Image (cartoon, helix red, strand yellow):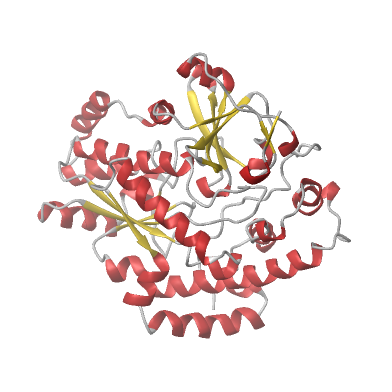
Length: 420
């Protein structure tokens, strides 16, 4: 069996220079979320805006049809990272747009996205979403608004949350999976995106719409994946890079490790301690997770849920490359994705700062690199000090909110907080 499948985005923790001091021992300015924080996110999305007047001019010059115009928008470099011409010329997507227009319906886009990564140094205590997920939802709204400039029904993103799907691989507790999915659902509604963002539980769709086929593929493929070398099933994948990504995605929160432990187990290679009491445990969890992830991905590839449930939809992916022999929309999840930053929203926490030319920028960074920085403000959801919304550069926060009173807690969880 040889398949071209998407692989996890490179997301290793060992590629960063970690702080030696425990970030939780440093009093960091902290406040609750404000309404103005959404204005910060909107400002971070400004770089994704297309000059509509200039775009219209180019469309007229190229004498594009309505469907070609829409595909020109959806494949725009500001919105996706696969080869523009390959995406625009994909015959299947042209027919998808034509079908929607002939029936005066929104153009459907199927996009697997939003998982739970319970690795503490990436996200210490969050069980719900953060500003990264909000930025993605708002980004989809922005794309829909751009499409509506030329096709009034717009687009409809079918978002398949795979948090439950990969729980067996990453050993994520079902309580956390449910909390994350519920928070996602609430954020879609709160951010006014219900007209263009439709959320589904990927695992539930497989159970209710794809049985017994999925289970049969899962077990038949799984048996081979557990016996054969992984290279046989993922011939175009760098297995070691994939393993490094999986290793820092397994559930380590339950071990309640200290910063010193995390540094020895997940930090720079020079600090790796293979004599650590949890080293062998994490290695075994990683080996199991790697084969489970491979099995699930190959089984999902056989099912091709997009074609099965939405036969007239465009396929989008958060990874570069072909999917099932076609060029999908390589959908970005925030403007800097696959540019300055390659981490998906749930592989870290959002940091907002002034980037090039003073423009507000959102990137995703492992929380171990953000917590404890005194030049950043830690923003939490009101009355939920364990749920972090974002880290914002202090100069940006003060510019937006003026003179504001911060708390300076020490400790990882609210139950152990001490005020400096």
